[in-house]
Image 1: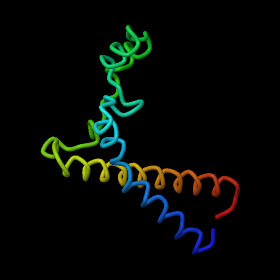
Image 2 (image 1 turned 45 degrees about the horizontal axis):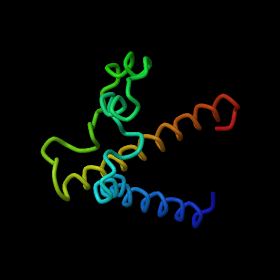
Image 3 (image 1 turned 45 degrees about the vertical axis):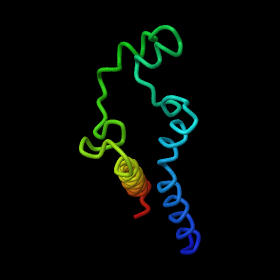
Image 4 (image 1 turned 135 degrees about the vertical axis):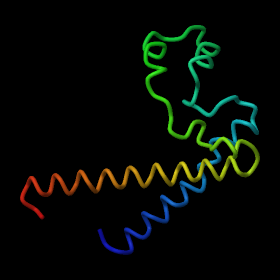
Length: 113
C-alpha cells in the first residue's frame, strides 16, 4: 500500500475512533435506551419478552475487560467519552496487531519472508 493511501487509511480510522462516543451520546439524546446491540440479557428480555437460550447459556462466560467501555472512576461526563475513545484505540491496536501477526505467519508458510 502506498504511503499516501496508508496515511488516509489511518486518518479515517482515527476519525472513526474520535466519533465512537456518538454511540453513547445519540441514544441518550433521543431517549432510545442503550446503543444498538449492546444490550444485557435483562434488556433483551424487556425488548423481546424472553431471554433466548443461547444468550442465557453463554452470557456469564465472557466478561469484558473494560465493561461499558469505561473505567470505574470515569463513569460520568466527558470522562466516560474519553474512556470510550481509549477503548476504541485499544480495539484498533489489537485488531491491527493480530492482523499483522497472522499476515507474517501466513507469509512465512508460503515462503514469502
